[in-house]
Image (cartoon, rainbow, N blue to C red; front, side, top):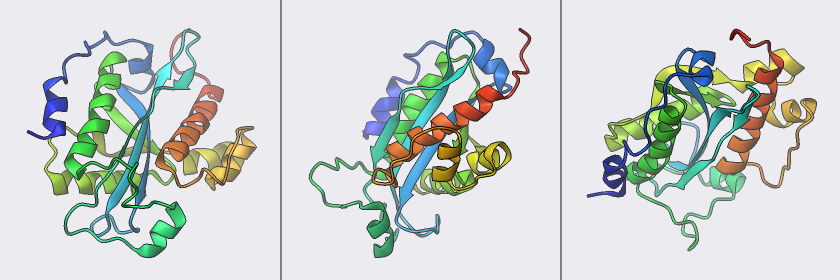
Length: 219
């Protein structure tokens, strides 16, 4: 029995909340900001190395806020490749003793289990991936799901919210660092290319833009 199998044994521990404002806000979908770090640009060929997911929640005032981050480091799946230039950009040291990487199916299960819990907690039906160049992240996730045979992917298979588009509309900026700065949010280039940091900053950007838009919900 793998770690992801053990995760699935506890999949129903979080009771489903009745549909509320969060479920109505995005037609039953829970936005979950995802960032991945990879061994290259080809999701069918290059390894998935890191994944972070930040569920978007709603506070008592009805404003969107980043939830608790779920993250995992991946052991490169058998048969996948790693471009050394990608490691130079990300700074990932594959054999670092504190990396605590998991096999691909177990790492997916660790993140997915927490995403599913957030979906249920917010009374939603499914997660929808939010990302900066979101289809890049979604394609790597979908490829890992297919490769590992994971059966409980909480994300919509093709729909996304892309902060490249949102940043361009709201601030005229499509680069993540520049969009964050235009939104009055911080960006530390020294922390960039960490899945956790990039996902958490992207979540802040998404919330800043969405909260500035008039809510479609009745007041």
